[in-house]
Length: 281
Ligand code: AMP
Image 1: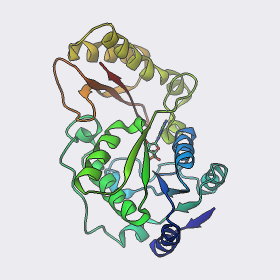
Image 2: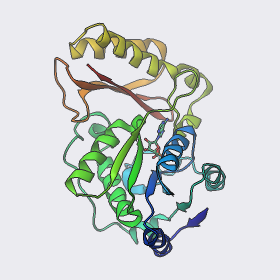
Image 3: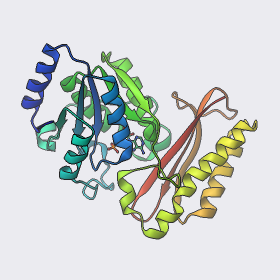
Image 4: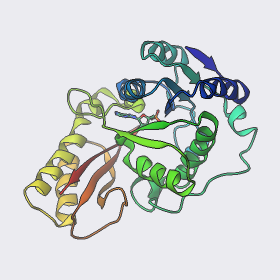
């Protein structure tokens, strides 16, 4: 496994793999790897000759009052886990290396962002789209792997790849959960022990919503109300949103049909958690 930190080194490595006409599976992350990331890496490993992992806490996708400084980092442990996952190449640049100071060219996302996290995390998806545009150009992957835990990100990345004609395939991967249902997340380490025991209520609330839909409920508000009230009763967190939208278009219909997403964001004292379920009806 090679570890590179500069664009120059990365380009050299990638051109060698391309000379051998190798398929490249790419997994972009912010590090502090857990089993969710490992699932993405395992799928990339199974489907490609070369696996590239990027580890970069991207300042551009954090708002001024968000947790950029306190975002958990552990590059040494990440390297160990990546080695076990049989990653070929890690790209772990500094922000200075990625942006050469203040980013002077950025990508602006206009679609699929007026809902869910895009509503409150202003500029977040511009930051995601900017860094992915750079990374896709540099890594030139055959396929890139993204977790459905961040379903809005998957929807936006699909749009980005289509609009900018990136010659790569986006592979969505199902959310990996703890045994009690809590979606694995690097941020879970910042839950207090009482919040940690309440947090599985997010997924339970989503399952209640899914069950309502499967039983024939088609009124969006009814589903939102049931999911919200379950989560409010079972946690001390503050609901940021509970939304039911079409997926991947992320359109808000009063009466639902087709493929949809039920998504939740819940704020605890130090950490805001997100989770979702998609259903095809
Ligand atoms: P992050 O490091 O949080 O930016 O995540 C990097 C990638 O891992 C993203 O595509 C995430 O959606 C994905 N991911 C994060 N948590 C999970 C999870 N619990 N299950 C599956 N994928 C995940």
